Length: 394
Figure 1 (cartoon, rainbow, N blue to C red):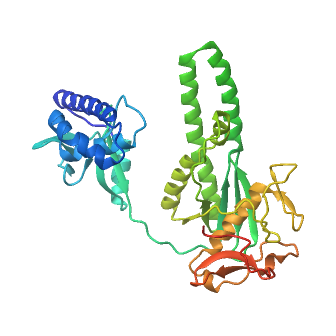
Figure 2: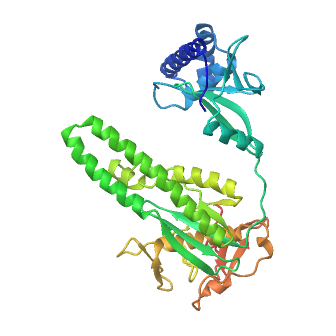
Figure 3: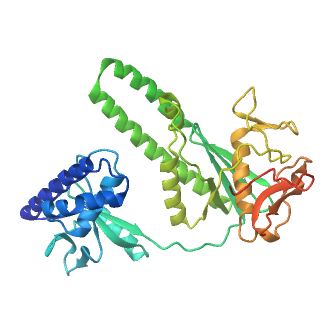
């Protein structure tokens, strides 16, 4: 949000922002040889508090930002917490934000009532709360909003989303495991970024730095816009089929080289998950996070667990037990949705799932319990060895 500060107040805020950035970089240099955050805090707190004179809360926010940062910064956003170091109030004509920069020294700044402020006001009226504000390097105010989550009743159907480097596969299953719809999203993002990578390699040969920076900005804008549009399409599909959404709890992959990392990161999972989480919250759709154990290796036709991909074609899933060959992304998305169905709270009294129109052992797919009674796995009743052959919680 923009502020309408006088020249004197603006100059005061600019000096504070520059001083905070300078202190941030100084603390980043002093962070070396500190194994824990508390070691870093003991090493720097007393000297830095005297050097800057900032409020303790302001300095604490700088410490946390430095500890999480990977390098120095040209400008940082300083956070202020309510009620100790910040408060918002209104008069008949203006709305203010009061920041406690130094002890016993607060500065009140009026907001500009534009579209950003109107959206901020509407969110507060709809139940959102703000306990932290931030001052950016370009002297704008950032409001960190939060809202208590409400447990929603489970919808009848479930949508499983399999996220990979090239595209996103989506499968919608009924509460009995029947496939209602399957689709793909995001392939155009991968194709566009592939072309950008080729163009970047040519431009790097000419050492055109300004053109490379413009290309990087356009690439990020394209990805942000299209990830948002893709999430909108997924939510519209979930609303059409009255389905909750389930995704995998993917972890950071191990670095395997520059080329491999570029291939994997063409579809940014973290950005997709953040936007999806936010939109699901707004649309009152439950987002279930399931573990990724064997979701790409489990055959939803016969229940066997294999290597996952065909030896001849990586895009296909080939079961060594029953011989079925299906698209690997679709197979994984169906497994993610099925796992979500089995992990629902009322799954203790569920009936076996039918997830295929073919005559297969999938009719005997059922959830198993360990010795304590906790539902932990999926296997078929005809497996005589008693070992789980499907999903597990870890």
